[in-house]
Length: 153
Image (cartoon, rainbow, N blue to C red; front, side, top):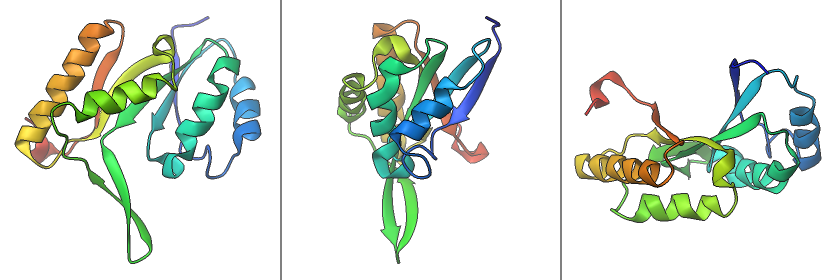
């Protein structure tokens, strides 16, 4: 197997593809590469994570998950919209631990904030929580996926 990795977005899983179709697709990927599934708790209104968690044990070991947390969805005049979550101190860890019941830690490549919270104290709380999570799981990578130039801390 090569060290080369490809990232695959999971938004279509649960929106365009059902569980069986997702499993067929992921099992059809060439096995000489590593694949990192970009999975968020909001993709397909939560259906993507349901599908991936239900089939994770049947996926090849060269497929891992990058779990994104930190956006909430809402409907504005019937349009799907998202906004950053302003985390309370233990809320992010609690959310992460809930997902550990769905995705085994050995299958996690990374955990990422999907976006920085709007409030500075929430940003620091979230980042400190992620650092703490990474201390408990030293092989887990940490990231922030959607960040604007004026949001650097």
